[in-house]
Image (cartoon, rainbow, N blue to C red; front, side, top):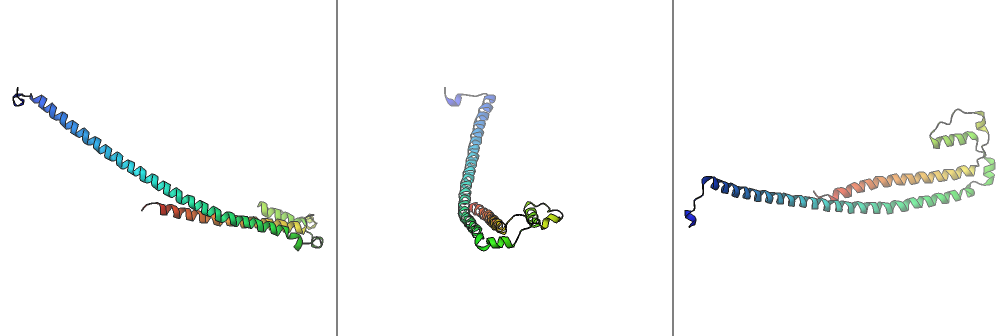
Length: 174
């Protein structure tokens, strides 16, 4: 029997054409899904590379800022301790005896550091507190050093944030 003599019924021809069309369609869908998958993989790869670049840039900013401000803060502490050690040179025992620190000063000083009100003045505020002038000078030197440290930390955090933002923006592709 020759192929030309072989006759298919109409429904079989339609079924064969439908199967061929469905196969071609399925192959096209799979190819489209593969392309979409490849595009997604490329996107994820670019995102990962961008994330790594940003992380490296940010790590560099962290290290640079840490080194810069750690040294500054350490120097402030050293100078503050030196100032505290020099108080006896500038405030002698004779100065302590000549100048008494009254209770009112101590109340006002403590209130300023706690943020609470010192309260109404009392008669006892004029009496000596037993705190020497040298102790006040040492406390003031210590507090001044702490305030300078806080100032450097604030400046450092501002600079850190600005540099971090700049590094992040520069690491992002346009």
